[in-house]
Image 1 (tube, rainbow, N blue to C red):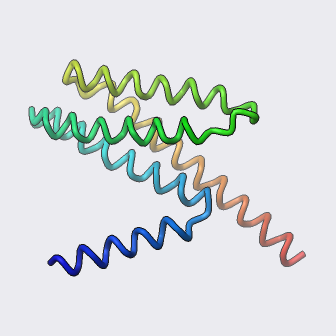
Image 2 (image 1 turned 180 degrees about the vertical axis):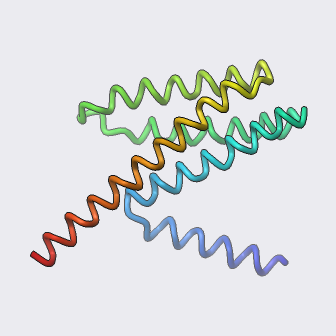
Length: 133
């Protein structure tokens, strides 16, 4: 059991170290989605420790996304405001022990991930065209 965990951690570490920026962003989205679902589940189960732990993990990921924004790019201001709103709603879900605000954020996170997956596909296609063209 312990060896399997060590191998998994090495795999994850290698995956992160070799990932492109787009892949890292998608990994962060995946984590945020997973933790958000677990937080909502905790609220529904009245397991507030589980809810708090997981909603705080989502907030940490959102804060990391916000901190990594390139403030010289125009869309960064809008993304920053969106991330701020996500964290506001997650705090609301956590303090009121209400699933609805976290469910709203979950919906946005799923859309956000889908957008980044499509953007990464287009960027890869363009890069392949440049290499092959």
